[in-house]
Length: 258
Image (cartoon, rainbow, N blue to C red; front, side):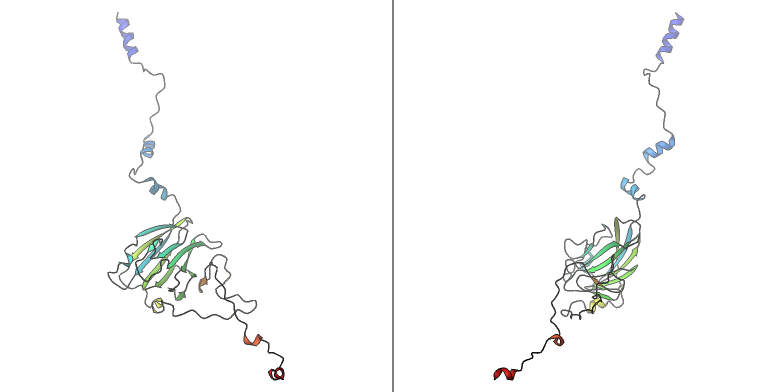
């Protein structure tokens, strides 16, 4: 009787399943599975593994206090490699509330120079009635110029300083905006000649074998010291031949009267 009781007790302690027990994960695996920072979103954790973005630190100033010019300016704006539009229109990425500002006043256009590894930026004027002053150069409609590491820009009473911090990513860039209560530029020449006084005078035609002004022949961007026109197609004006090329008539007016 005692032998049967002992056999029954041993049988009750056997596992009901014949599968071997699964190994328990080590503490390091448990930490990886749960995450050391469970509150951090996945996109933020993946961002640390991506290439750093180029940062444009943009300071803005307008002389009129209390004006709602910068009411729609965000603190941070991430943009792809398409042109970033600045103006008062609804499609502008940086929207400024000024009544005399064009809907598309200017654009910041990233591009990659030949052999370069960092993004470079052009500033292009898009307004037909106003000009943009960039580092001492006056840009009119569709003219553009490369930005330096620190560039001073003025247009329609707004002063803007752009500081470029290069990053290795070629997919996008970030703009960080700062509103300055004090002026940023000592002598903003664009405010003195903001509106066009008239149609610019035509330049003489270039000599044979010489390039016309503005066509600098750069494959990946204009030169750093001279603005160049954009890629838009423009109608060329037909020039009348100079007086020296007109031939004088060989017959005499008096002879025809006889």
